[in-house]
Image (tube, rainbow, N blue to C red; front, side, top):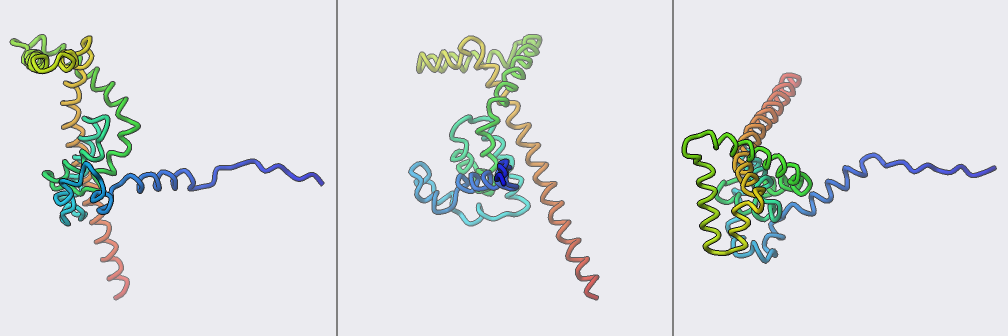
Length: 206
């Protein structure tokens, strides 16, 4: 009898298991922060116990910090989110974990920011004084005075960079505020669910 060929099937949970393993590898631990060359000088600040606790304040703040760093920084958003968690008093591991998908989504975010910035600058041309454009040109002139390459980049490199920057500066606070609100609601829902479960268990025990 001929042996039947086995059709390879994806094992359930293999993909999700790999994602979880990859995330755990990239989310910092206290030991990895102590060993990190860049973070070592400020490790004593990042390793404060209060920044590693999950509570109703640190969780929404971590969501806001993580989303903000994901939007603004295409690279190094993980260490930057860890640093930003210190003044924001956000949960460090959660803030860094939220930036992990940023590696895959920052491209679409920047494209959206570019078109948003172009629209904002188009509206700005209708405003007396053109405040946004004037400030953008002032930044470009200051950058050019310090470095020619930086000045070209700040001037827009063919009118591409300035609209993107304007769009990012609008998207970052808006998306961070949305992330803060959603995380706060999720935390309240989680706490409420636990209280309801405890109350149900006490009632059933009577």
